[in-house]
Structures are given as structure tokens and as C-alpha cells.
Image (cartoon, rainbow, N blue to C red; front, side, top):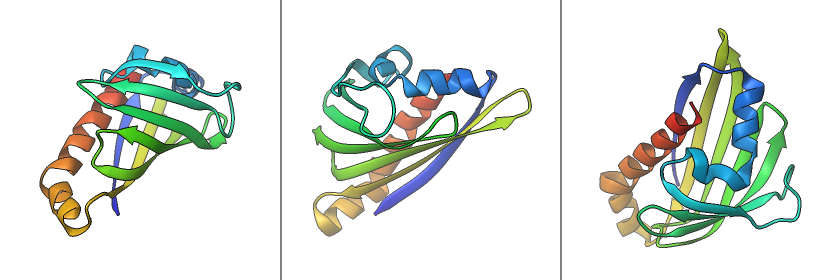
Length: 142
């Protein structure tokens, strides 16, 4: 299983960052890697809240919240997708106060397809692309 963590500090109060992050259906507004997103669940908050994302330049994700600690933590399970080299993935966002702003720690884990070949491709390409893409996501939160 691949995993990594990246962090950023945002010059906004934690409740504002949470409000942006927790509005699952509007990720296309602030994440440059998402061209279209919409809710796929009836409820808009809490465990099981879900969205669909169309990615740039291609691919789709079906995601749902598996942890929802208001203002502090949001865990997203990527349970279905197209054109991704992994079987499953999970993004765990942890928010904390830092100075007058908010620190966002993103812990990402994923399981590659294709066994040993997938792990090799991950080592030389996929991991770097994921870090780059998720770094763009964190910049978009600013």
C-alpha cells in the first residue's frame, strides 16, 4: 500500500477552511484537478455524504465521507473510479489552528492495481503525480 502526507498552512480561520472542504459537491470550484463535481447522496453533511468528480484531463471518482469530525477531520474514501492505477484510495484531512490561520495535513493512502508491476509504476511515476495533484488541491483551498 502506498501512502504519504503533505501539509499546508492557510491564512484563513479553521471554520472557513472547513466550510470549503466540507462542501463536497463544490470541489470543482477550488480544486484545479476537478472539472465537474456534484453530490451523489441525499444528505450534504456527515458520514456517507458522497460526490462524483470528473477529473482533468480524464477519469472519474466516486467518493464518500467515512469520517466527519466537524471542523477537525474529514476522511474521503475513493471507492469507485475510472482510469486510475489504484484499486482504492483514502484522503484524510486533519485541520488544526496554527497562528492566525489553519494547518491542513493531508494523509493519503492507496492500493495499486497490477501487483508487483503496479508497485514499480507507483515508485517511478504514480506517487509523484498524486503528490503533485494533491498539492494543487491544497493550494486551491487557500
